[in-house]
Amino acid sequence: MRIGIGYDVHPFIEGRKLFLGGVEIPYEKGLAGHSDADVLLHAISDALLGAVSAGDIGTHFPDTDPTIKGIESIKILSFVHGLVKKKGFAIINIDTVIVAEEPKIYPYREAIQQRIARILEIEIDRVGIKGKTTEGLGFVGRKEGIEVFAVALVEEIR
Image (tube, rainbow, N blue to C red; front, side):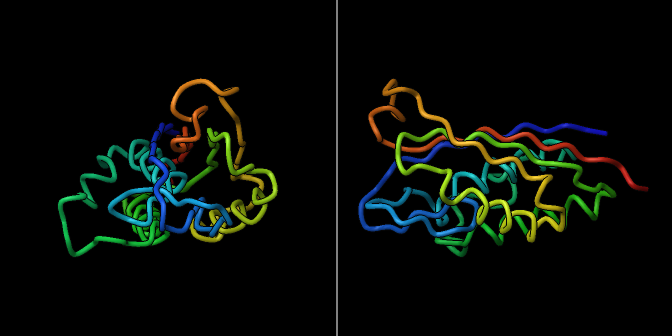
């Protein structure tokens, strides 16, 4: 078995939709980024890539590549899932912490879990999604952006 850790952060920006876990979340702002800026899927992707020693998102999807500008992060996670399988590993579980003052995560938790489980071909009870605040501290507390921590456990199946 192997474990990987992922982290990502994106600032809020006007004029974009907000996506978390491949689910559009109604909110007044979206997140800035080269892709659709789904900070949750980016952290999960990096955790999986770390678990199988395959670099990070920037290795496979550099933000200097204009051909992938605006790419949906579900495509990134699908690519990473394929890479995990190609390297001979199965995903045991994913656990995440979404740190945001707003929007509240709980109302969307199950939809997010279902979307991630479907992409990764695992049971929904193997996808942990938790929302936390910083009690008003730091850039997250000032509602300037969202950060996510993720861990992934994989098992070699060869």
